[in-house]
Structures are given as structure tokens and as C-alpha cells.
Length: 425
Image (cartoon, rainbow, N blue to C red; front, top):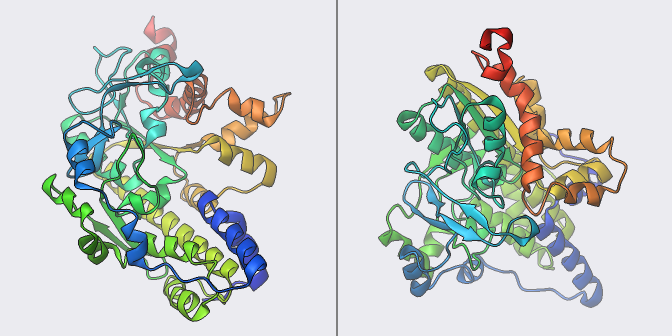
């Protein structure tokens, strides 16, 4: 393993830091510059103490009386609930309706046979638009055939892969569209998302099926949900149980490294994490807060993108075994497009390179937006506002459908009715 040049490593790591890590790094530098005093390290137990739930919160969620975004799932962690939510375009209510398979309902051509199933995250589910405004429905209206929507907001690639295995037994389709959001790579590694993303008024974070990886060793291990029954979910109210289960969790170590970057106690903060990074193939000197955060980010990215590469290999193996064809869609939020346009940086570049090297059929929505923006006369912020309100608005979903359409039509055999030429007359 060849160590990275220190200056190059710190620069790359700082550029790659997400909002949370970058904020902590900036805070560490600012605080250290002002006081120069050491700060006590945060322990795993201290961080976990702030994450546990109350029994009242768990009671309310399982009873469907609180945190209305999702419902408990023993296998996946959560599935979605129907609802009317004021988060749509022009502050409108979004209508979310789900069918007997917990799929988002099909509207266009729902009486016709389905040969396209879609899997993934909130950019598959199409959060923040109503049932008929999704990119699946835009494609269905044009192709004159239905698409099933098995997307679930907040899911990892691994959760979507597990659902694909199950749904292709219950409601099989010959063609699959698998959407991969920028954070899905990191979500693969989350055994309890609450470690990285705290609960809020609409959603409580369950434990999850996840993977444990080491890119240096080529290790990829699948792990089930730690709370596989509603009763076991109450363990998340018990600090001692939570500490036993998660004190050695990979994501927790990453978050602790960022949180402890302000510490001036290198013998406590730096040495252990340096050893962890080395076992994962990242060799660099870790002796400052900046180096600690940069190393944590580099380690997180390497493990996350490796996990997604292995999951794609499993998807491809499944497709070969079941005689299916898969089209991948790479999606991301407006801030990722803005960063790529203004800085030339995209966090998922290693995964994009993997997809290209393997020559796997995919649609890169970030690239599609950058190409589209090149012919736009206005400001970047105005361009993005036309497509995003957090997630895609209806216009953004239509853009997504149009970006997917050429590769999808190329894949489909027989061709959809509008593309059969005179044979359809």
C-alpha cells in the first residue's frame, strides 16, 4: 500500500467532506485557533446516549400515531405509509398512495401487463410529487405501458437489492430500473441510520439490514436487521444494549472521528483511527484534527463505494440467473450538480468510473443536467430551482423520464407501441 502525499491527501479529504464533517472540521480549526486548549474526546457511549429513543416514542411509532413517514418492517427496517403531506410544488399537498405490494400505485395503463419494475430510494419513490407526477408515470404515459414503483425514501442500495429479490418472486418483470442516489453508497454501511441522521418529527430511524466491508481485503458480508421484531425495537431505548451492539460499528467510528477532530489529544484520537484506516488500505499520517477528519472521510468513501460495487455485481448475477436486463440510474441532489459545475468535483466519481469500466448500461442524471445547463442562459441557481424543491418537482421528474427514455427504449424488446413504427398501425 503506497501512502498518499500528505498535502494531496488533506486537500482531497477536505474537498470530499460532506456538510456534517466539513462543519465539524471548520469548527475544530476555529476552536483550536481561539483557545489552543485540549477538548475531551467523545466516547462511543456518550454519542450513543444521545441517540436512544424513549419507550413512548417507540410505542407511538409502532401504533402509527407518530413519525408518519414510515412503518416498521422486520426485513427492511421500514416501508412507507400513505399520506397527504404539504411538501409539494407551490406548497401543495403531495398525495402518496401505495398498493397491495407496498408499491406506489400505478396510474397510467395499469390494466396492461407490467414488464418494467423500478427499485431504489426517494428518487425512485419520487418524494415531493403526487402519485401521477412521478418519472415512472411520465414514462408510462409516453411508452403506453405501466412501470411499477418499488422505491422507498431513505433506503440504501442494499435494502433496494433485498427488496428486488423478494418482489421479483411476487411480481416479476423482465426489465429492471435500479436507481442509485449519491448517499446510497454510505447507507449500505448503516446498521442504524440514527448514527448518521437523527430522527425528526416525521421519521424515527430503525435498525437496518446492512453490509460490512473491507476494500483492502475484498471482504463483503451481509448482515440482517438487528431488531427483527416490533418487540426487539424497544432495545433502542436501552443504552447498555445499544452500546453492546454498536460500540464497534463502522459508521459510529467514522462519526466519532469527525466529532473528535477538535480534540488536542492525539494519543487518544489519532492512533486508533490511523490503525483502522491502515487495515482498510489507507496509509497516511494522522496527527491533526484536519488529518483525522480527512482520513475518516477517505475511509468512509472507499468502503461505501466498494460496497456498492459488490452489490452491483450481485444484481448483475441475479439478472443473469433470471434472464432479466437492468438499467442503472445515477441520481443526486441539486447541491451535487452545483458542486460539479462550480468545482468540478463529484463525490461518487469512483463508482461512476466503476460503472463505465464495466460498461454497465446506466443513465447519469448529474451528467445529463450539466449538459442541459450548458445551453441555459440564466444563473445556475435559477436552473436548479426549475427542477428541484429538495427532491425533483414535477418538471424534474419529467426531465428524469426524458433522460432515461433513450437507454430504456434501446433495451426494451419488443419495442413499446410508439416505437414499433408501421408495425403498430
